Length: 605
Image 1 (cartoon, rainbow, N blue to C red):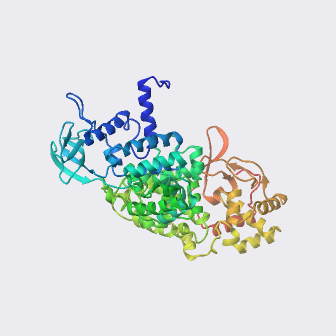
Image 2: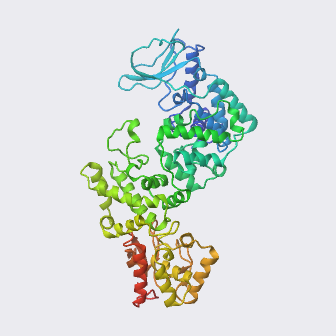
Image 3: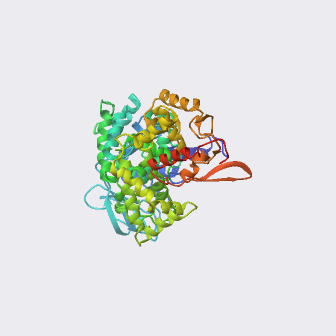
């Protein structure tokens, strides 16, 4: 491995390549694409177009830029400028970006007197031509006798080309005149980065439907980038944006649908005419309004889940991004295709990509991700979200759409069906989806049996008469009776969950738990991944993520599969299918076992 040595030309070139690629991550390709020669290519091409440099006899002309490098910034340099001004950009990367913007300001690519086109030419060899009408250079290496073209016109006519023009389109001309670039660079160096405004983040999130963390990344000029360099955001960057590590990674996954070119186009024209407005009150909010408009035009508007629901979805750690999981429930029929999925029509032109939905899967890995999201999300939405939550309200429609898709005869239906029934839990998933438990569960959501804001996991909300019966028979307070039912029935009655479901402060929760401990109905203990300190008496079943550990007594009630293995006398949860009934049914069944003399005890499971 090479040591850092500024006198070593190889190291100097590699380091320059690394720092530039890192600073521009998400806008250009990864390591080995944005190499040092690409910078030479940019400078040399600019001078060739301007007429200040010409290759000598035997000398190479402007080196082809390579796909996905600096040619993408022609007319769209505003995306780089936003990142350079953002307070979350690392200082060493900011300096790289500012230097890049200064060079760009002096090049023809920022000069409004030039008109640029990109296209494809029937030509084999490298070329660079210039005449009185402008200049043209090869922008990529030849592929099957065709070469990509970058053309700069100074008038209405095109310069002479060394081959047949197959197609061409005008390059976007947006924010980024030489004056704007020089002024922004000077302001950043004089005043420091633009001030951050969390209110602007909320406004972008509300207007576009993306999550708050995704909106923060976008306004920082870093919309989902970072596939090559870790950490994606360091501690200082996350602190500026007000993001936790999981939020930042969840937002990056959410924005993974954007291609590099999409990111550049999205942010190309969101900066103000006068860059100084970024430092004025409300400056970033005005950027957010323009970004929201650009987002909706490029990606469309999607319903935004409540922040608390998004956070809960993030904690599920499904294999599709949390926002896509929420959108699956908010708009089941038109739920967007998560990043990286295969499409019903493949290859699919980019302009039609967003017309495809999550149900248009053509690969088994994609089907597994959709199935995982659905069968994780449905019980979660029913039991772990409050009545009136729009994601919870969408669960019955998810079931209807999935059943309709599975009833089809096309390839996506077959692939999704295989995803449902594949694996050890496949038959249980299918039986649940097509059986009465799912229908009864969804029926409770449709009927609106809970008061708004209350949770099905709170027995006081869904079975108040049963809570009163437990309290009367055991001589408990209502709070202790409700907690006892939750411990008897629910898979994850952690302290955090119980307090959220019941609306309890910690002191109220501790009082109810203490009452159960005093009556000998529960025991105090510390157990891995339990998130609580009181448990039903009797054996305990451990579990590996994502399965929860549970008391053995409640395993039959939940349909959990237990086993012992690896030569260790330790009970393990090996499967936990969707709830086998509604929570009112399960609360009643658990209490019935207790009344029948089959309550939890220290006996073996």
